[in-house]
Image (tube, rainbow, N blue to C red; front, side, top):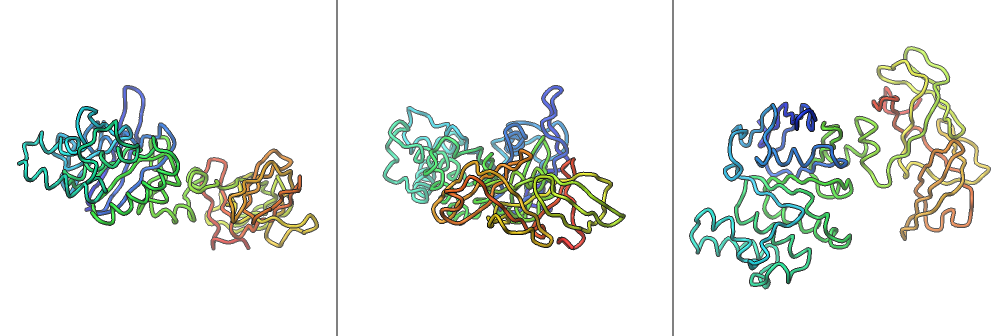
Length: 371
């Protein structure tokens, strides 16, 4: 059995189903990130693990012990909140030691735990300050330190970096990764930011509509998404989705015509459904700018459109192009790409494409490639 096991968990508030049949196994020492849009149920799932909410049905077990009826203080979990939740009238030392003092731990033990955590988090010189004298990043480190001193079995983070500016978020992500490396403790982290999730996670759990859409290593979800939602949510910039018409089909293959561009290809699918349309998914790095006279490559497609704008990011650029059918696509390019042109021609390799049915189901080619 996994270190932490979530089995057939549902959660309803009145008639609203927030979580539906959630199953997840988390191994000891993993850094797991729940990611998804607002309202997908990720924070509710985190709160059920720590005991702040009870499942409507299903079980949560930590180290083979079902903890549904175990009070939060006895589950061996520690939670770090977005709002820091620091007592303004207490010093950093007093805030970090609060839980241990309430548990009646000896003073010498408390002092040792706090100073050890302060050393890990570089807070030694701030122990006598109050929260009003701290920066946002320092406050977040104090909140993390308050969790560390308890030596929990599981750390739980509920969007802890969302109140910080962009530069500090990047810095704190690096600090959390280093903290996990040093402590080796199981950490579960909630965010709506998929870049943050990909940076931090050993295991990334993508949620939507109260369900787990897919879980696994971040790069696996990026390269091999199970459905259109995961394909579109994971990655920055997002995957391009192009409508395509099924020009001909038989029991094992289809001939596609791209609606927003020229070019077609024949593909063999594993378990081909009866469809007249589907979507082609191509990431920006699998599209390239070509000259206006370039013909469609074999097994590929050409897209002509008007340049909406160019994101210049230093070593590379992303060109946003509006096609005639209204679809906007993004192609990765080098510096100065399309900077002086109103139009662009983009070539795409369908051998790198993913395919989706209208309901978002992933259609897998028989060999993962076009014919």
